Amino acid sequence: MGKIRKRFNKNTVICRMKKCIFLLFTLVLVNCKQTNYKNPHVMLSTSYGEVEIELFPENAPQTVAAFLSYVDSGFYKNSSFYRLLSNENVPPENNTGLIQGGIFVSNPSLLVRLPGIAHEPTSKTHLSHTDGAISLARNNPGTASTEFFICIGDQTQFDAKQSFDRLGFATFGKVINGMEVIRRIQNNVHEGQYFKYQMRILNIERVKEEVVSH
Image (cartoon, rainbow, N blue to C red; front, side):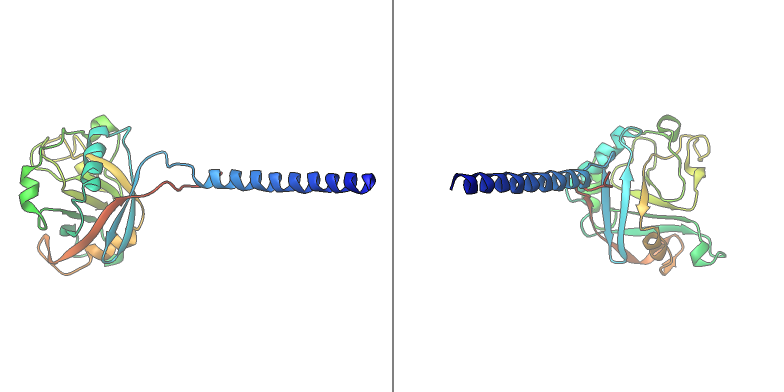
């Protein structure tokens, strides 16, 4: 009986060791998949699809903080893209320009109550209005808040020292997935610089922790 018990105990130990190794391997995989993004990401959901945007708080801390506060407050729920710039002589798939959106149409009373964000020009942030860049729309520097535009093709004329007042606009992030959605929105029916019908923004929300595995 003693020999049988000893053999049984040895097999039990081996079985438990295998289970521990399996659990350890599983935990390593899970931790790899839960690595955080270096920068915050947001998902812009539209009636044409989703657009994922990476924000750059190290470059434009005040702009990103303000934008995320609007996102977290739900300001962009049921808002819209309402303005565009495009070249009528260029085929849609090759067009450049921008689309502008925010709460100007959906919630103008809130817009006028919001304080302006301190201007962070590209000369300070070292960012540029390249293809996919998201930037704040403004009148005078320091008046920007919820309204933003997304560049289609490089639009470096909005950078500091190249814009009409040489102060430029405050870009603070970049589209990393979904530029085809932005182009589809831009190619909708418009009259001058404004869409004939509102291009719905269903919501903008933070992307939860997920990222590339090791």
